[in-house]
Image 1 (cartoon, rainbow, N blue to C red):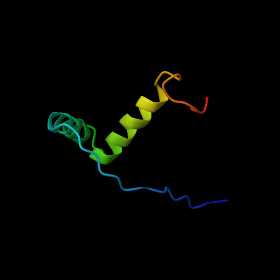
Image 2 (tube, rainbow, N blue to C red):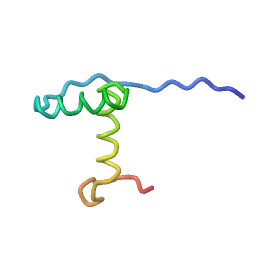
Image 3 (tube, rainbow, N blue to C red):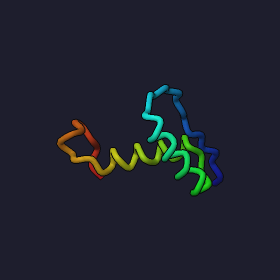
Length: 61
């Protein structure tokens, strides 16, 4: 059966180096995605690939 799913979002403000934001903006534009979506993917990738000893209580895959 079809089920409507809604993703919950939270607004946060982060200060990032201008060069980093410029590079991310270029990458997002080249891949036809929003800067926000790219940053979220980058953060998730970093967390998923971080050494487990760095993150306490990280769920195992």
